[in-house]
Image (tube, rainbow, N blue to C red; front, top):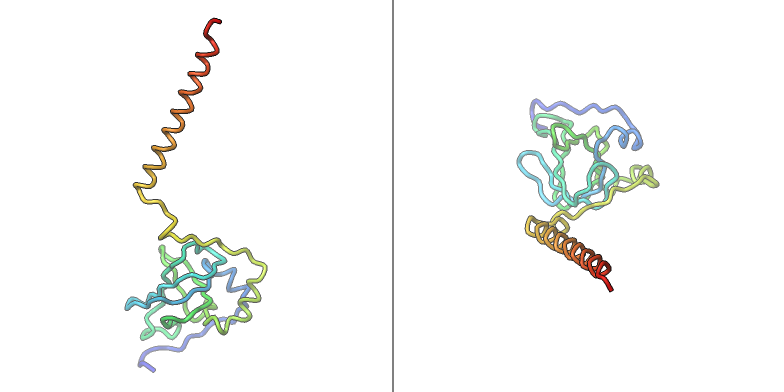
Length: 159
């Protein structure tokens, strides 16, 4: 153990209490871990807040806190996290566990509504796509307006 690191003392809580307390709850697989104590996840399922297919969750420096959560690349986790200053954070006391040990957490989540995930890389329109859609829609509106005016003029002609 690193000198100066204290053990983590957590209040025992149920998965239902962890769910209520957390801002974000999801299952994800770690795709990378950075040197700023952040883990990038590929999100597999979400129950709270997360609607993207990737998210970064931070923890504290494990050299300074016994409450830090150390994520392993390519492992899957049941994550409970808080949102602080625009970033997700978790630790030993939040209920986050490796997915293989999440039996009680998964039981609690049965019947809870899942958040629909959005693959932002392939479903978001870029600026050109938005402009093309606007031009086509605008053109169609003008075409229908012109047809409507033409029909009205034909009906008004004397016989």
